[in-house]
Image (tube, rainbow, N blue to C red; front, side):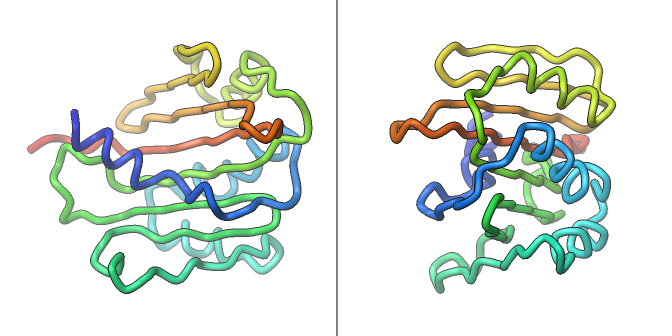
Length: 170
């Protein structure tokens, strides 16, 4: 379980990279579907989606000390993505993993965003937990989705979506 928690931390886009343009929750779900969900779990299809010129995402250069770590990150004016696909990881670590983080244009209504996410991605009802930073989880086959919404200390609002491939532990 500790490895799973560490993998989620490694997956989260860096908090120090600014996202300049807030988006609506509906636009965020559509962007996540386009870049993460539709190509999943194919790394080549993800790469083609994230590098689409109209998205304006730039890959983040890894510092030398991070070169051996799996995964890459992309930043844009309205979203940050991270992606890891490393079959050599221990089987209890999800791979591939895709995440997106955006600033929201308005106060997040977590229940409404969760419903829109489920509808936009074709997911069944999810399980929600938390109060200040709410999380909804969906399990569909070997895929696990997470939605988080939060009010940040600076008063802005954030939404993140993650998609993990839960591999068989053989």
